[in-house]
Amino acid sequence: MDERRRKMRPAPLVSLETVQMKEGFLGSAASGATDLVLLLEIAMGMGLIIGAWLARIKRFRKHAWCQSIIVILNTVSITLTMIPAFRVQVLPGIPEKLGRVWRRRTRYWAVSLKLPACTYC
Image (tube, rainbow, N blue to C red):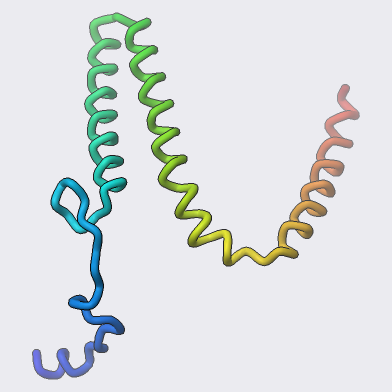
């Protein structure tokens, strides 16, 4: 049975020995930036736990500051990691003429939704 499965399995397109991966400072196959994001996310998770503890002991102002800082850090982290991936993987696949079509549709919907809303003004 194992012999038949082995024959049915397709061969890899690239052998793993030829692919060179950058190693991060945590010793994994991930890049250094990915390791940094992982450590930042772990720190933010600990900060969220501290923020929940602050709310539980009724220190609401400190809780609000703690949670707000973590939300801002998370937004920055997501933005810095997702924008390069979007530019490399998504943006080249979007045709140029698609933007013009969506602008026309957006204007159409804005006008069509605004007119009924203005009747109640």
